[in-house]
Length: 307
Image 1: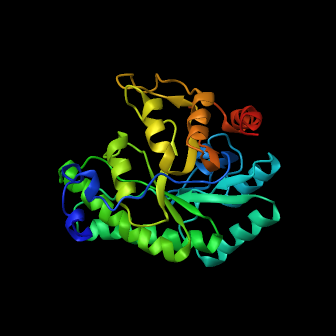
Image 2 (image 1 turned 120 degrees about the vertical axis):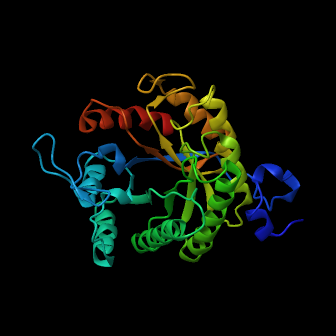
């Protein structure tokens, strides 16, 4: 058995399965059950703030705050809201976070979680340290809001590192953030979001190697661009702590923007077969349509399927 320190500086691919301090697929009692949520990213052009910059309304209408998004969820009978970090004001403070928590409670909406746009696939040093610090900051913010989950990313393929080095650095950063998240009661779902986790193997290895009960995978149904995305989704489903539904998939070799409609029934079956229980959150990304018109249609389609 090798030490964790040795593991983190060694290629994951060079290690046998017995060397990993592995967690097993999540074992949930009872039957699969899922609740509908919507990610704020579905309305990304509707917010006043996006990644620290003020946006201009394309349709001349009033731009939203996170509080307006919570109101939309309440008005459309959506149980859960993912309050994505990108759309918070740049001067976000504890007072505002507590108002988000208060507002959601009074409107009968649960905060399903949030997300940060981090990159852990960096060389060790100041830039990676800054990414870790930002994730820890949002762990604090999530805890203040009582948001139980944060989507985190591994990172793109690096020009400065080999894939093995990038994976090792990512795991070390993920573990450091998990150690902190565990003290705050916040899950960190590592998302299948391209780059070094464009295929399921690295993602599963990192999550299995993470030494924390607060680790897991953020299952995004549209983010595998492999020959058989559904087969790859089956591989990650047993480790999933949060789910995002995309309305399109794009297989390997298909030009960007020419994907096919998601087989929603198949996605749901994959999750039920894994006995997934938790949020089933829509992240609507279809272009050139009005999400205010289309998202409610998707929600109504999902209700009987998840009932």
